[in-house]
View 1 (cartoon, rainbow, N blue to C red):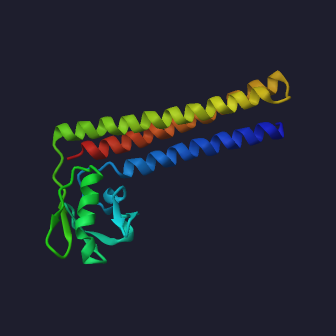
View 2: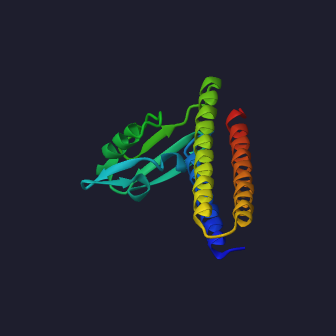
View 3: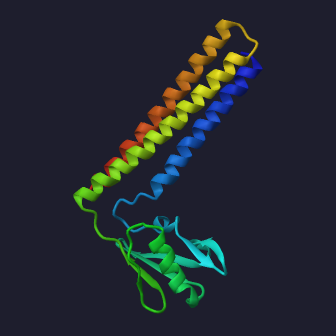
Length: 184
């Protein structure tokens, strides 16, 4: 196989890998009813005028399966952390006891579970679009190479097989996450 085509194939694979990794990262933020410190990864706190991730200004723990405990390293940050959680629009209402913040994770209703599944399906579809775009870019690059038509066709077939593998992988991730959300 032509060296140019190998590079194009590797680039497409890398791009598809990144799409799947992004999906997995996004799905971590979609909760399935259990408390997990990862739920607060999107929270940014105003720290001396700079937006800072919550994990860099406080300890986040899970005392039990339904509660998150946030212990700031500086007590003066409690109002800022509370504000950051509310601005992140995660649907959490933190309780401030003067020392730390507590967040009770409410059990998911059937309706909320369905909404979360829709959200997951949207993320999955966006990932599939990213994978297909990587395929399209690779096919366009293959057409620009100075190789025979047969080599180009074979390379496009290889790219399509790679695309199919990644789409299948994404569908498997969807099935696992959907089952996790819908399990009461």
